[in-house]
Structures are given as structure tokens and as C-alpha cells.
Amino acid sequence: MDITLRQVSYAYAAGTPFEKRALHEVDLTIPTGSYQAIIGHTGSGKSTVLQHLNAILKPTAGTVTIGEKVIEAGVKPKELKSVRSRVGIVFQFPEHQLFEETVEKDIMFGPMNFGVPEEEARRRAHELVGLLGLPEGTLQKSPFDLSGGQMRRVAIAGVLAMDPDVLVLDEPTAGLDPRGRKEIMNLFARLHEEKNLTTILVTHSMEDAARYADRVAIMHSGRCVVEGTPQEVFAQDELLRDFRLELPQSVKLQREFETITGQAFPVLYLTEET
Ligand code: ADP
Image (tube, rainbow, N blue to C red; front, side, top):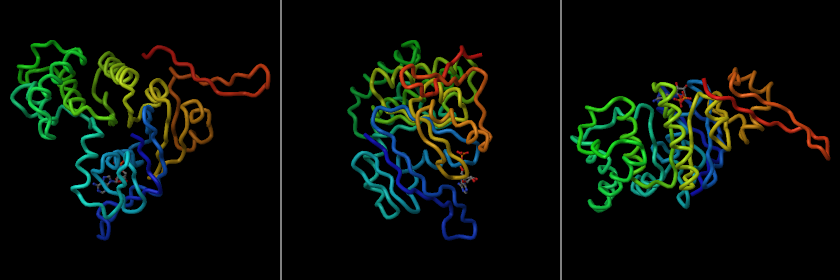
């Protein structure tokens, strides 16, 4: 399911004295099966873009196309329900949204709310705790008796239980220790590869973008200022400097030469995460 943003502009509190233009004519195409990173500083518009990816926000101008569905300013809310179940969003600190008595009920809540039969929802919950590396016994526990890292996995399982075509991740490793970060990022990489799940990662981390994504878009002041493969984008030193984005120590960009044509092309080398 491709997602396309065409000339998308968005203003919060449009038409009031508090109007705040957050996006300006953003163009971005995210093809089915890709792993797209969206990076940029705080306030650059990443979260606003993210909320357009499953129609939580509708563009003030321009169009967002999610699969067959075209979302523009006047679209009716009832037309958006099908989109919401196809695009799963793991919000920052998703564990704050856990609320049921047991982990099993929490994971089953989303699919049952969208009409999935109880038995199928339960089957998914059992499969997902395994996939996320949680012991089977976790299902009958209260989510509030788990560690922070386990709670995050349960919340992620709740999104995956909807069986989405597209998974959107908003800083999914915020607040985790390096080991927890790596485990979660490897899990998403596996899901992306094994299930060909279109993955969109919203992050501050150039390292995660370089390590996991096959496309990178940089947001700055509400605009998508550059988009391409990590190699193409991270080779633009001047542009990165202009936007105060710095490649971390663990990411090295080297220009190599094609033996026959002699043309230079950029290659990224990643050392082990520290
Ligand atoms: P990021 O996710 O990159 O930090 P955001 O999309 O949250 O950026 O913010 C883009 C701009 O929109 C910022 O200037 C921010 O202050 C503003 N903004 C975000 N949310 C709201 C809101 N609910 N009301 C008014 N302005 C907002």
C-alpha cells in the first residue's frame, strides 16, 4: 500500500489568531515494502507528517493518498476508518496507552474493536508475545506489573495485532537502554524483511536511519528538504551542515570509485553501536 503526500500543507488552529503553519507543500512518496526514515530536529514537522499517515490529521491543502484512499481537506470521517486499521502507529512511549486488566486483553482490544472475532484476536495475542520475546505467562499478567521494556513490547504487540500493512514508528526506542534499543530496532527490521511490512521510522537518530532505512527524508521548518537513499542524503555534507545535522561517529561515509567509469559514489559504513 503506497502512501503519497502531494503538496501537503497543514496549519494548527487554522483561521484563528493562534494559527500555526506546521507543514509547507510537503511531497513524499513511500512505496509498498520500503523502510522510510523521516528525520529532523524538534519542531521540524515530523509528528505532523506522521499524523497525516493514517488520517489523524487531514491536510489543510494538498492530498495524502493511502492505498486507494485520497485524503484531503473535505473528506468525511467515516471514510477514514478503513485507513486507520491498515496503518498502525506506535506512538512515542506507547506503554502510556495500556489500560486493560491483562496483557492478553490489551493486545486483543484493537482487533476486536475492528470486528476481528475473539478467537482470532486471542490467537494473534499468543503469537505476538512469542514474536516479541515475552514469556507466554505474560499474557495473564497486568500490564502494570511489567518492566518498562516489557510494557513497550506489549504496546507494540497491540499495534501489530491489527495486522497492519504499514507500521509507523515515532521514536520507538525513546527512553530505552542501548540493549533494549537494539532489540526493538532489530525486531522491526525483521518484521520489515520477513513480512515485507512497509515501515516508517520517525527519529532524531541519523544512525538508526543509516542502519535500518532504505529511504531517508529530512524535515526542516515544516518542509521536506531532501529525500533519497541514506547514501545519497548523507553524502550532501553542505546541506546537512545547513540543517545542523551531523553524522554520528559510528557512521562513516566514504566515496568510492567505479573501476570502469571512474565515477565516485558514496558508500556508508557502520561500526558497532556504542
Ligand atoms: P516535530 O515532530 O519534528 O518535533 P511537530 O510536527 O511536532 O515537529 O511540530 C511542527 C510545528 O508545529 C512546530 O512549530 C510546533 O510547535 C507546531 N505544533 C505542533 N503541534 C501543535 C499543536 N497542537 N498546536 C499548535 N502548534 C503545534
